[in-house]
Length: 77
Image 1 (cartoon, rainbow, N blue to C red):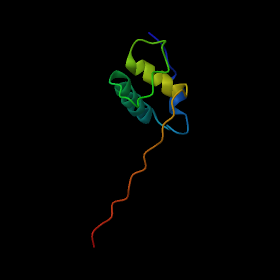
Image 2: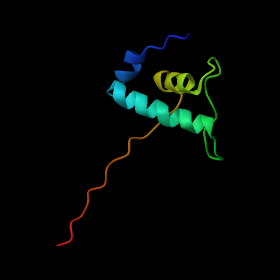
Image 3: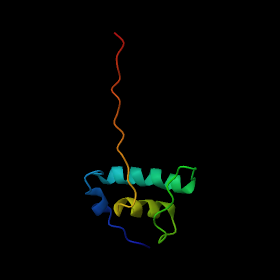
Image 4: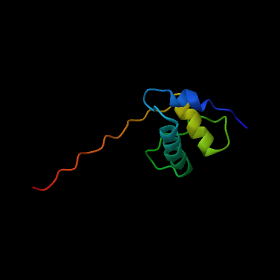
């Protein structure tokens, strides 16, 4: 079983928490499992499971992501 330094990934300034790291890895593993035309190919071939590949890509900085900013809802007045 591969050991990944989850705390290293959680300390990155873009991620900031283990919960966000897990959420990002889940989204990325779904992309790897069901690729579309515009999906970035897998950057890690060392592991068997998609979730481990996704975690490794994020922790090692092999893929870039942008945080989505929430749109402010305009109230009808």
